[in-house]
Length: 285
Image (cartoon, rainbow, N blue to C red; front, side):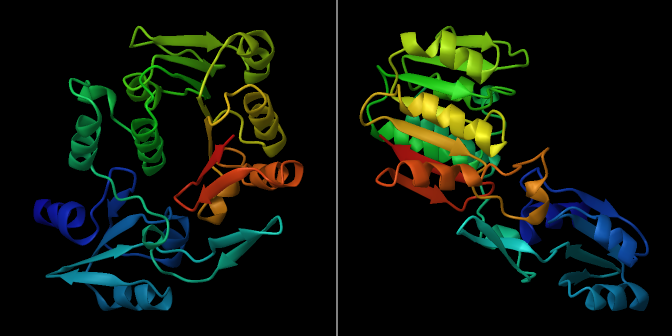
């Protein structure tokens, strides 16, 4: 099994820590239907198991007496247009279309290339979306500028961004333990912060990842857009969910509609919405 796990992580599927894998002797349709998208199964190499795998149109790898397969469910989101989500019935791996291929070594080398002496222990959960933000900061002379973050959560982005800007003002309704001295945390709603604090801050970057309900995130956007400096960048998260289950209120919800609301009210706005799971939209004022 140790060899299989090595092959699973390093050779065949290149897990990045987010996917789950399980070993079971015999599979059935119920097990497959309840596995998460891109979940991994290790099975005994039997005719019955192969028949069920083939019936569910899943690809697999045969290694001696074991079978390895990835759960590729259909109905991945193919495109967003006219306020309607169109789903593809393709069983192609979601990661071929919605990139998610950064690994720990990549993370360390990329972050280290931005600035020396960054605490790598702080960089535990950066995503492709975060890498895009860091690249833009790195290319826009961010050292003496200010970054606003709506929805700090565990602070994985906050503690890294703080190394590239003068100050970070971050907001969340849950507690956050500040690590760097140039980070200023406010435990309140984004509405409260926008009313009470935002008018007094001069800033050039903002990341919106608080409430994922589109009416709320659009309000966050407008509050930020009306105050951010000319030429500033606004990053909106969860704007291109990749699979149907990401539309749950506990995930991306209907945050993707925020972009359509922005386009309707600001038809000449400069923006790009990247289909990188779960989506990031970049707006420049």
